[in-house]
Amino acid sequence: DQQVKQNSPSLSVQEGRISILNCDYTNSMFDYFLWYKKYPAEGPTFLISISSIKDKNEDGRFTVFLNKSAKHLSLHIVPSQPGDSAVYFCAASAKNYGQNFVFGPGTRLSVLP
Amino acid sequence: GAGVSQSPSNKVTEKGKDVELRCDPISGHTALYWYRQSLGQGLEFLIYFQGNSAPDKSGLPSDRFSAERTGGSVSTLTIQRTQQEDSAVYLCASNYAYNEQFFGPGTRLTVL
Image (cartoon, rainbow over all chains, first blue to last red; front, side, top):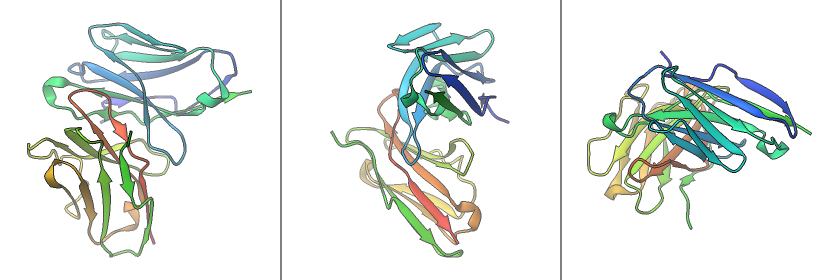
């Protein structure tokens, strides 16, 4: 049973528009959430994180929103750029359960010029 | 500064052979993780080392898989009697405390 779900395997967005990537989780003990970006033939790179004590974290064009009651988080990229085309992984962890990060299956974002 | 490195970058082997994959984490990082990504799939957790504690091996898919971390630094993932379903990209990551993980570039394993 997947504890972290990314129900959209792919997403296409026009350059300059907003990209919204969604992630749902089932374990209410998760208290730290991260987004990673992965280009082909490279390892994932950290993008942005959010702790469960917050509902929003912003870093430049990237904003992560957390809705704890819905066990849902989303990554907003605005404006989207062609270089943002990659696979985006959502990950979650629970400090009280050690550092094992649980990853979602990923969403492939294509930003069209 | 040096990131996480993995070797080899590519490994082609015949079914039934043993393989060893190496990971050099970032210096000072106390935790080291192994994941694998099969074609079209997400990241599958394999094993996690934290300092001197016993490793979390809960993700290892079979007893053909094992890993060691020597001196709290370099780690080796060993797959014995490889099978075709072991073909995947094997990713190593490290971090400190509860911060984000830094990933290596991965080793692409192909079992013929």
